[in-house]
Amino acid sequence: MRAYLDNAATTAVLPQAAEAALRAMTECYGNPSSLHPLGRQARELLQQSRGQVARAVGCAAECLIFTSGGTESINTALRAAARKNRHLGRHIVSTSVEHDAVLNTLKSLGQEGFEITLVAPGRDGSVSAEALCAALRPDTILLSVMAVNNETGAVLPAAQAAAALKRRSPAALVHVDGVQALCKQDLPLDNVDMASFSAHKIGGMKGCGALYIRRGLAITPLLFGGGQENGVRSGTEGMPQIAAFGAACEARMKTRAADAAHMRALRERLIAGARALGAHINSPENAAPHIVNLSMGRGRSEVYIRALGERGVCVSGGSACARGRASHVLLAQGLPKSNIDAALRVSLCPESTEEMIDCFLEALGQAARLF
Image (tube, rainbow, N blue to C red; front, side, top):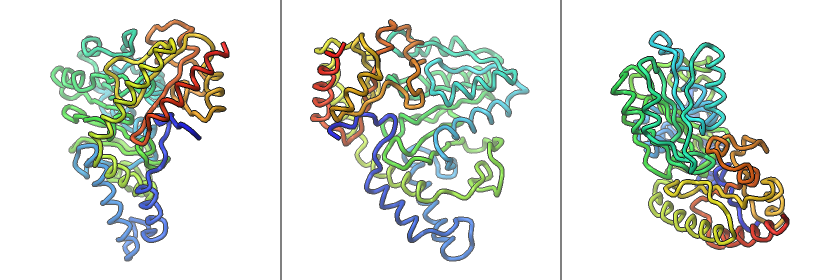
């Protein structure tokens, strides 16, 4: 493979994370709830890993629980918030560019009698703080906003909207989808009650995530059982994945500033080269440094993806969860159908190189001649 550029879908497991997972499987393989020495050893590794992830999130370790991934964290947060505050109102605010884990959970809550307002983005994919704040009402009980959009890299004004909601309704709850922001940019937790994260977007293993829950906030669990994870997420902890998550967070945080600068430079190289080929950039100018959405304005995404793959280049047409459906994010932006049909998402990681960008641009130019 010449260029893997689909890191917003998943990343390669970091060597440090793989080593941590192997140790959890071969040395610290006890059940963390067991009282014997191997159980205590596993429990110590669990707490060490929790501390590593918590430092990356910017919270106290006691405020973090482990889940099976971002989707479970999001479902837990949204359903718990709606249940907790339904006596105060039935209005929930989010955006139309959220991940399907948010949108489909909100759709389900809508069928249970909650009123959902989805704020639309501008044509460049950005969502204004003014539009989010204007959607808030006295009966708004929950605000859910992603920190970084997974398809365009747009940075959403979660902090500003959260502050506005808390000023108006202190009892209302705020959830932030931080999956694409973790270890890439600051995620202020002021006025945030819950935030969701995923391990495999930063060099950890699939099947592991985390949920930040503000200290003092009691929520109803999504899963019931033995009371693990402070009673919020029952089930024996998946220690190999959790240990890998902690190790990945620690490794990424050590080089976060340099990695961000590196990816930003690659992003600029990518955008300049794509525009020279005639591509339209579907991402905002001030997007996060690791995601670029672009379109040649002709053809179809799946044909480009196949042609690029034959040349050793891996990208996607948008969210990996969409599986060929038209992007709801780009539709919300109001882009021309030709741009949406041919959209490609290029997503970077710290290990991405200039050579990978150049391979992509060369392959893109060749693929475009098919149409």
